[in-house]
Image (tube, rainbow, N blue to C red; front, side):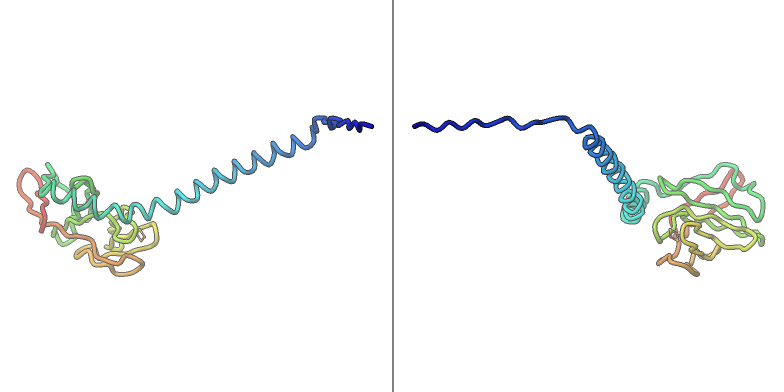
Length: 165
Ligand code: FES
């Protein structure tokens, strides 16, 4: 006697509710992945800037040794002129007592561009509240670990020469 086994095909019906759930799950995972990438980029970029800034500054420093700011001798007392020293932002300050100071404008904490605040006569970094002395570039308070770099300034009839001190 021979036995005969018949295998029935399973009754497969598309489950529209389940595929809707799967699509929702996929959409959620895609959104979570995109949010994760954004979060990683938001955390990673300041770290990259912190690590890259010294290299940029170094390469910039070797390429450029002096910048001439045409007509900057006319900068009013108590004001600031932002400029680029190579690739790095820098600032020229004409202080109330007539003295001139030029400094890098790159915060030594995580590389944000700092701003001169004439009312408080200080340099402030809005990123994390770092404060620098507007005459010496010394890091006065907040997270910056080092002072801003000072440049040498020479004022003449046609402009202001800024160079490495
Ligand atoms: S980047 Fe300037 S205080 Fe953090």
